[in-house]
Image (tube, rainbow, N blue to C red; front, side):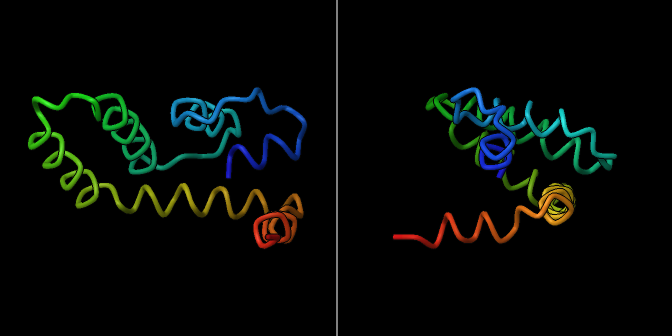
Length: 101
């Protein structure tokens, strides 16, 4: 969604990484909840360590912990993006672009 929004605004820089999307999310200046901040921070950390094959089990446990403790933060991220898109009339544009074959 962040990439779509940035493309619509004409500010997209061409990256598709999770780090780019989280940094882009932070520029919207949403009033983030503590759960939302923790979710994004932990998600980014989880992304950074996905190639650490030697500690895969530890990382899987961390991911489960993240979802158990900060899933509300994921919903907050969704609400912020949905509200932004709704306010800027982007919801139908996103659906139109993503439903085309």
